[in-house]
Structure formats: structure tokens, C-alpha cells
Image (cartoon, rainbow, N blue to C red):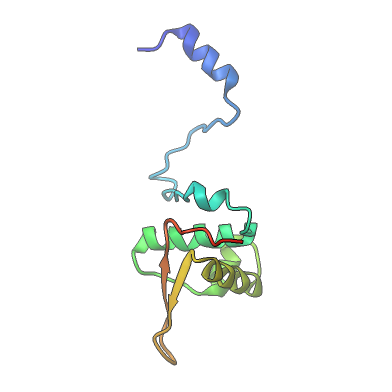
Amino acid sequence: MDKIGEIERLNEIRNIVLEGFDPVSAGGFTQVPNMLLNNTDLSAQAKLAYAKLLSYAWHNNMVFPGQERMAQETGSSQPTIARAIKELEQQGWLQIQRRGQGKTNIYILKHTITPKKR
């Protein structure tokens, strides 16, 4: 059990406070690999698109609601999402398996990648 003084000291140095936050009842949460977050070769839009795809995968295992819905939910546009997905694919964070005309693609998210040599 922590001493009251220790808890107060920790509260003084915290810079993010979660108040009344229950991740399960609030709709869950998505963990994004730090390797992706810290990757300076990826745009912020690509990082957000990865996180959104990951949240869909965790939420319903095999769902991909489409780029229009992703754009709406992230406050961006469909062309921005399309560019972000292409960027993720080019950088090796995402693999797209095309299944043919009229069928949805399968998106394979990579947790870690081997950085490309410059």
C-alpha cells in the first residue's frame, strides 16, 4: 500500500489524468506499436489510419468498413485515407490482398517491420 505522501508526490508529477475513464465501458482502446508511433518516415495520417485499422480488427476481428467511413470517423477525407493506406503499404506496415472485382480486400497489419535502408 502506498503512503499518502507518495501518492500526492506522484499526482504532482503526472501530466495526463484520466478521470472517470473506464476503457471497457468507453468502447475499449487500441494499442499502437511504439516503433510505428516513433517512425519519422510515416505521416501522422498514416499512423492514425494504422490505429483505426487496428481498432477495427480488435473490435470485430475481420471488419473493414471502407475508406469513406474511416475518413468520417477520423475527421479526414477519403483521399487522405487512401494516401495513408498506400503509405503504410509502401513502408511495409500493411499488406493488401486483393480478392477480385466486387470483393473486399484483406488488410494484413504488421506489428513490426524491418526498417528499409536509406
